[in-house]
Image (cartoon, rainbow, N blue to C red; front, side, top):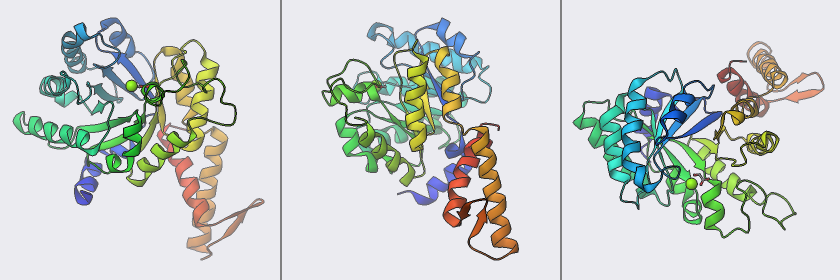
Length: 318
Ligand code: GLV
Ligand code: MG
C-alpha cells in the first residue's frame, strides 16, 4: 500500500534509520521533567499528553509541549508528542495544537491504543491538512503506532501497512496486560503462576514480524519498576535479543541500560564488520558464494545477519 509514497518519504526523513535505542517518556504537564529530559542521553523522547497527564491538565500540557519543542535544545534526538487516542475528546485538538504550534520542531506523533488502520489514516489525513494550511513540508511528520490491546494485535498487519508516515510499532505492555485480563499487577513481569516460558513471546513476535514486513522499527514499551535497574536490563535484553530496536525509558536510571541493550557489544560489532569484509572479498575477488572465517562457514544469509548487527553498531557510534 502506498509503495512509491513510502519510498519517497523514507528518502526524505530516513525514518527507518533513526536510532531509537532509548525513548524517554516525559509528561508534558511537568515542566521540571521536561527541563531534565534535555540533559539525558536518549536517542528519542516524547512529550506525553496521554496517560501520564491528568484530565484536568490536558489543555495546559498541550501548551507546554508546544513551548518545549519550540525552545529547542534537543540535539539530534527524535522529537515526538504522544496525543490522546482517537476515541477521546482530546485527540484532534492535541494534533492541531501541537502541529500548528510546533510542527517544524516535531519529528513524529505517537498515537496510542491503535486498534485499526483507520486510526492511523485519520491522523495521516489530519497531519496533511495541517501541513498544507501552515506551509510545512507535506509528509515529513511521522507516526508511531502503539499496539496495546487485543484488537490492535489482531489487526497489527493491516495497521503496519496503513500509512507511509508510519515509522514504528510500539508495544504497550501496561494497557496490553489489562486488555487481556492478565493476572498481574507488575508491568513487564511474568504473571504470577505462569512458569512455562515467556507469557509475552507471542505478542512481541507478532508486533516485530508485522513491523519488519513493512519496513518499520519495533519498540518495546515501559518497565515500571524504575528503581530495579537489573530487572529493567533483563527486560530490555529479552526484546533486544528478538530484534527490537529500542525501549521506552521512564527515568534517568533506565537510560544507560537501554542504550547498551539495543546496541551490539563491541565484540559482536567487530565480528560483524569482519564477516562483511570477508564475504565481500569472497564474492567480489574470489567469485565464491561461501567462504570460511575461522571455524564458521559464511554465505549470503550470514552477510545479511552481519549487516543488521553492523548497522545497529554504526548507528550507536561503535
Ligand atoms: C504504554 O503506553 C503501556 O500501556 O504500556
Ligand atoms: Mg498505554
